[in-house]
Image (cartoon, rainbow, N blue to C red):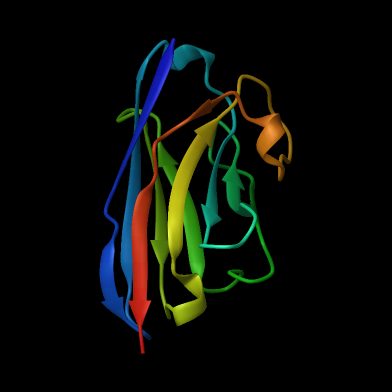
Length: 124
């Protein structure tokens, strides 16, 4: 089984940066693609970014494209989300997720394992 634990959330001023981490443990050999999702109060969970197992392929939601960067370090069993030029509308609970197949996956039902989330708050 795989477990995911996020870290790095917090409070930041608009225009600032944060880096989120998601550490995987357990049967990590089963992990292929991983992704980040976020959910703000009163909103549905939305896709943010995904990365394949090698890190060679990435895909981003239009709302974060050019500002966020997803990466992974398989030696550390960790993925990252570097968030630059943060805006108040980026405020949400951010969750990482993993799946045991590969391809571009942008919906939550395509992922098998989820972390518990970390809060990101961006103030004006």
